[in-house]
Length: 323
Image (cartoon, rainbow, N blue to C red; front, side):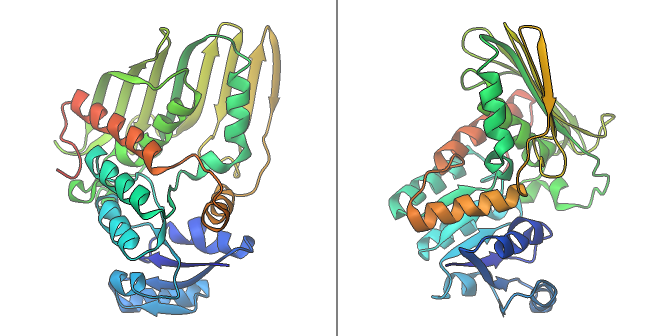
C-alpha cells in the first residue's frame, strides 16, 4: 500500500488523487498539508482524509508518507519536488513539470540521482485512448500534418493561471496538453517555426498559436487559450498519405470522446472506453513505485516538453516563466 500525502488543498486534488485513491487498492491518501491550517482541516474533513499537517515541510518530514502529490502553482513545482526528493519521497507532480527547461533539467537530474519515481501528471496519457490514437496514426502511412488544441474560457483574471510570478500563462496551463499530444502523435520531435500570442499583460498570454515542423516535411499546429474568440475546443487531428484521424476530447476522454479514422477511403467512428484518466494515472504511479514498472511521463520527457515551451515563448517575444 502506497501512502500518499497532498501538498496543498488545491481544487485539482480531489479529482486527481483523492477520489482515484478510493478506486486503486494500492494507494491511500492519509494526510494533507496547507499553509492555512483551517483550510487543510476543512479539506480533510470534506474528503475523509485522516490527518493534516501545518506545513509542506512537515509533510515531507513525516516518516509515514512514502509519496507526495504536488498540485501547487506552477512556479512552485520545481522547489517542492526537489524538496520531496531530498526527503526521500516519490512524487506525482502536476503539469507543467516546472516553470522552464532549466528547472526541469534540475529536477530530472535530482530524480535520476535519487532513484525515486517522479511522474509528471499528464493524466490523459494513461487512458486507453492515447494508445488507440498512436495505433490509428500508424495506419495512416507517411504523416503530412498534426494539429491539436485545448481552448476553454477562464475570464477570472485574478486566477493564479494569469499570475506570471506563479508560472502562469495559456501556454503553461492549456498549451502543454496539445504540445504533448503533438509530441505523441508526430513522426518526430517537433521544431518550433512560429508562435503568436494574444496577451492579457505583456508577460501573460491568454492564448497562443504555434506552427511546427517535423522531420520529413510534416507540419504541426497548436492552439491554446484561456480567453479568446475560440471559447471551447479540445481536439487532435493527424493527416497522412492514406487518410486522417480526428479525435474529440483527448484531454478528458473518460467524460466523452470520439475517434474518427479514415484509411483508404473507409471510415470508422467510435468511443474508447476506460476509467477516469486520473485513476489510470494513479494505477501507473503505484506500479512504478511498488514494482518498478515503466511509464511515459518521465522527468526526461518533461525536459523535452519544457524546452519546447521555452522556445515557444521566445518565438512569441515573451519572457520565459520563472526567470
